[in-house]
Image 1: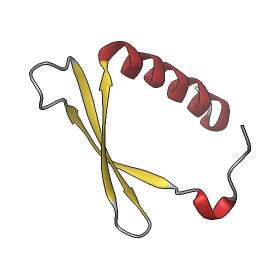
Image 2: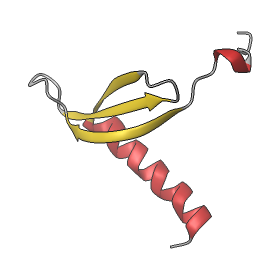
Image 3: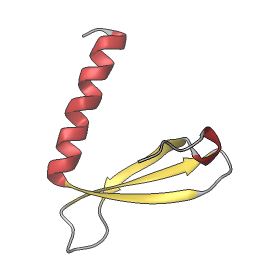
Length: 66
C-alpha cells in the first residue's frame, strides 16, 4: 500500500476521555479535535483501552522518567 502524502495527514489532540455512552459498549470514548476544529469520537473496548494505556505509560517513562 502506498504511503499517503503529508497533506492527507491530520493531527488530533485528545480533549476528553469518558465512559462509552452506548450501553452495548464496554469501554471508553475519546473526543479528538484537529487543528481546524473538526471533532471525532473514538470508541474503544476495555481491552484495547488497557493496551493503549500500557503503551502510553511506557512511552512516557522513556521521555519523562519513572
